[in-house]
Image 1 (cartoon, rainbow, N blue to C red):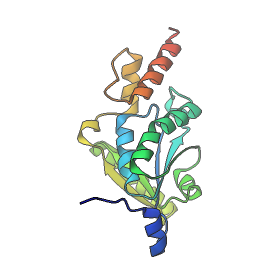
Image 2 (image 1 turned 90 degrees about the vertical axis):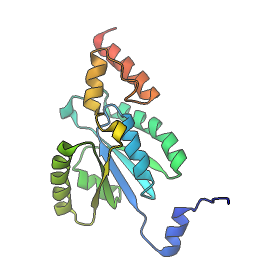
Image 3 (image 1 turned 180 degrees about the vertical axis):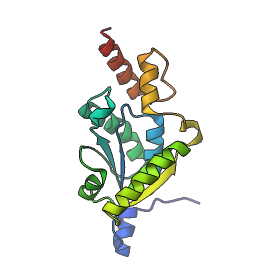
Image 4 (image 1 turned 135 degrees about the vertical axis):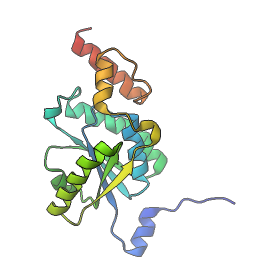
Length: 186
């Protein structure tokens, strides 16, 4: 039996349902395999996905926001192709809920790695709901082999000369390694 793909956008238009636009925000400094896992899974839940790259200077980023946007865009291209929906990658420096409204998002997607993430995310979801109750927060659990990966640890391991190849995709590995060498003056 041959399976055929259903064009979700056409089907939704016929049912007169609003387009489901998801927003997955983060700093993505650098983008990890865990991020890409959440992006791929989130893309299956929505008609269109926006990946919001936060400027967040306070975290002391390794990459500036334009470099992070370009890197996330490059890493998301195969995911968008595979899943069959558009994935836009955009920077923002406003309140998350304001960016969600500006993106016409109907949901904010957040990845959870551990119980410690849940406490923070639960508070943020409550605050966002109070600011705009029409935008839901959807939590996706990290896949078991990505639960321990964080951009902060990836940066630290890279800066100390460790191997990050199992935590990030190839292009991110190349650019992160080059950036770390450049910051060390190598």
